Length: 271
Image (cartoon, rainbow, N blue to C red; front, side, top):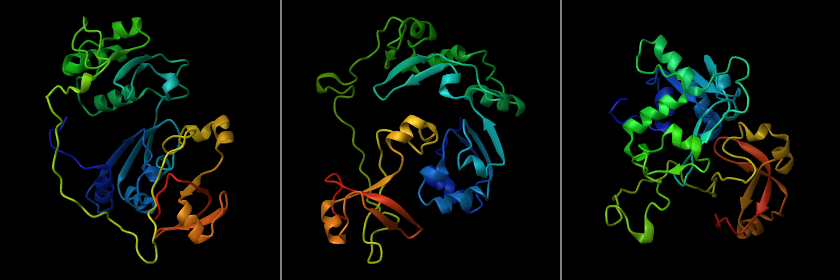
């Protein structure tokens, strides 16, 4: 891999819009929905050669010159690593549908066609073998051990005799002795509230849907639970604007507007 620091997601979008990013390979992501200023993102992606690898035709995939059909989590084997550092094996329930393939196979085939070597894996166990060799904290999390341990193993796990690390920093003790802080310079947000648009609008999460809804919005059960979105507003702002709970309101920004249901809550601060 390149040892130079690359562009952030937002910087990639700006570079594509300016014509400096000639091609973009998007895998399992939906920037048209998830990134700020969707109109700007759409315009940027239409100026570059776009390849999308995903399990559904997302709004981002609809803009692509090439769409590579990926297999879903239920159609491939591998591992999941949770936020508690737990690595668990995943076994496929069904074979990949149609022409879809696991992500690693698509990448390996593409690399082979481009003349790159070293990606001739026969299965996912060989990929984990490489991770074991090159990433010390995963050294003992082998395919064989995961097959025997449904609960998985938590990194750091440096060798096959190590049981895994349940508590990373136990009893308040850090491996380096103390916490490590980086001083940073304050940078103003790209936009601030003003007279015409006096409120801060931010995104949030709900229990029943995740990310841009690429998968969860296709679930009948989840859509029955939460069929529509909503905007949360503080009690003070709702009273000032004479908005009732569950009332349909129009939210307008510098880039567009939407009619949506209001939820009055103490979780949101005034403004």
